[in-house]
Length: 378
Image 1 (tube, rainbow, N blue to C red):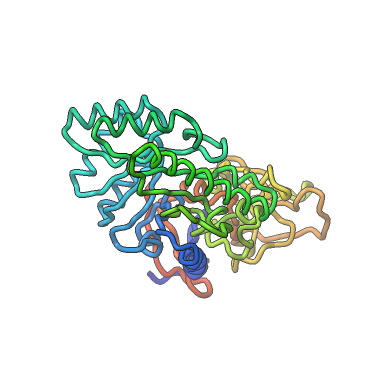
Image 2: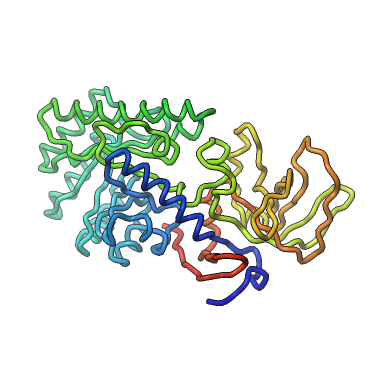
C-alpha cells in the first residue's frame, strides 16, 4: 500500500519494521549463543507476519497465552504450540479440537487436581495430552515450587493415567521488578536453577522429563548459561517498550511500536497540549510508575520518532491524552499547532497493541509499507 503517515487518521498503531527485525536478530543471536531451542511467545503481537520472522520454521514452535491465539496461528499453518496458561476443564474440548486439526498442542498445569481432570478427560475421549508442569521459580504467580513434594505427586498422577510428563516450564516474572541488569542476571540464574532442579527431581523419581522450558525477555537476554535447559521462551522483545527500557533491557530508540496521535487543542495556562490519544489508544498500563523514571502514559516524540525532551502524556481520559512536561522538569513552553502529528512510545507493548486491529508498518521516512492484521480477545 502506498500511503504516508500524514495521511493516517489518528490514533493509529505504527510498527517500525526495520527496528523490529533488529530486535529479533538480537534475540536470535542470544538463543544461538545459549544453545537452546527458541519457542517465541506470540502474545505481544498476535500477528502471523511478525510470527513468521520469529519462528524457527513455518510450523513453529510458538507459545500462546490464549486458545484463540492457538486457533489463529494453527489456521496459518503453525503446528507446534504451547498454551502457557494453566489449563482448566472448560478448555480441554478446545484443545482437543486443535489436536484434531493436526496441531501438536502442549498444555500446562500445577496441581494434582488439574492432573486428575486432564486424565479423566483423556480417558473419556480416548486421547493423549502433552502436559508440562509449571514451576514457580520466583514466587511471582502460578506454579509448584521445585522442591515441593507436590511436584512428584503431580508427575506420578499423570504417569499413572498414561500421560507421561512432557516436561517442566517456568516464567521468571519477577525479573520485571529488578532494579539493575545485575539483578536480572541473578534472576536468570535463579530461574535456570529452579527449573533444572524440578526436572532432575522428576527424573530421579523414575520418570522422563525431556522438555525444560523457561523464559522472559529480561532473563532471556541477560542469561549467561542455560545448562540443563532445552528451550527458551520470550515475547515482548520483538517490539520492546518503555518498561523494558526502564529495566535497562533496551534503549528507547529500540522500541519498534508507537502510536501516531494528533494535537487537537491546548490548555495554555496549565501547559497542556491535548492529543486524540487517551487511554483507549495507549491502554491504562502505568507500569513505569514503579520504576525510577515514571513515563506517564507514554513518551511523546516528533513524527520521526525522536523524543521531545521531557514531554510525556501526564494524564489520559478515554479519548483525550494530556501532553505536558514531565513533573519536576523545566523549560520553555512548546506550542504545537492543532493538526500536528506526534508519535507516542508505549509503557507496555502488549496492552497498547491490544487496543488496535492492525499495525501500520512503516518503512524509511514516512512511508506506510503495509497493514498487518492482529487478533484479540479470547
